[in-house]
Length: 98
Length: 343
Image 1 (cartoon, rainbow over the protein chains, first blue to last red):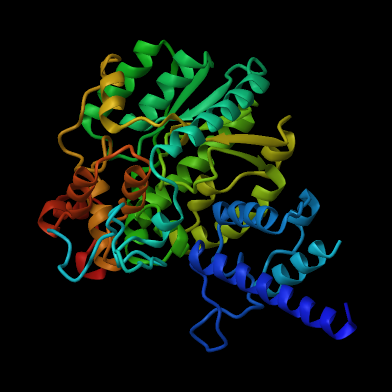
Image 2 (cartoon, rainbow over the protein chains, first blue to last red):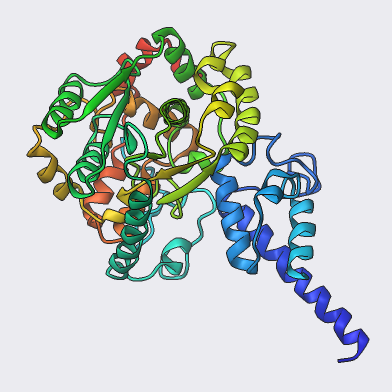
């Protein structure tokens, strides 16, 4: 594979991952992200803003592990790695690449 | 009161067009039914879940004074759960009831009849009525819970359930009981919550966020009902708790449940509406939720029962359309000091 093809492939993979997480958060946890003032910012802390409760978090971790075939450790669960959409995207991207 | 004519229901499961996040295909099938297997296939899934439940029970039996704490409302589902855990699985259960001040008289008789018939201990906790009334009143008029939580129960029920859950966890830690069981059925809790292992450190993180919200909404007394001391968490020999919802694995219809628990002396209540078998406030919670969100807060669980083959569509339509109007819940609203216009 040429370098340019690899770059395109990586962007496509990232795009699909982004869309899957976004879709899950919208359909299951009913969190819609947008840049306008009425929406939720991708950097917003989902716990502090009361958008995810403990049930929602358990569901989210189970979804990410199953959908992306990754294992999330207790330490990672306790860290801030899953506290916003932007952080979830970065975290999953790094785990998938491991 | 019945549903507004503009609201249409899924052709398989009765989920309404007003339900958050729902979409329909050209045949009127909702997005959840499009992804769901045919009803008979759910029995295979439930069989696998029952095996996993048994493994959890076997791994934790005989480690403490009680094997499991059962959140027992006296309603049909928690009565059936208690019966199954005691009689089929041979677990030593402690039944724990939170008296919210609105348990119907027949349901109070059922609490005693079921536990007495099964020969198990019953612990009753009655939070201060003034606090409970404030909790219900505030929940009816203020956004306290996540949107996702409101698809599973009314705001008033969510607040009560969270208080109950916190009390159960505290008791489990105090007594080192490794399992907590609820009588929740499909749609009331997420699908993957038949068995959840609760890490106490993770839970502490959510509790610290939740408690800020509860203190803001319900006042300083909320600390006693929704908080948990570090001494209790760190002093307990348990580091993880098993939270189980066995009804998700049992696969029994309402008629089958009632037939079984009737043998224990359980009798149906006549004053708790068509969606509850224990709480006199339930219809008020439904009426408030419908006024605010235009769908019955029980519709998710009812739709799941239809989807999984445990309820007929006709019966489901009857239940979903039974929305209490204000005249039916006026007395309950007065009891908690709720101004209907503030809803």
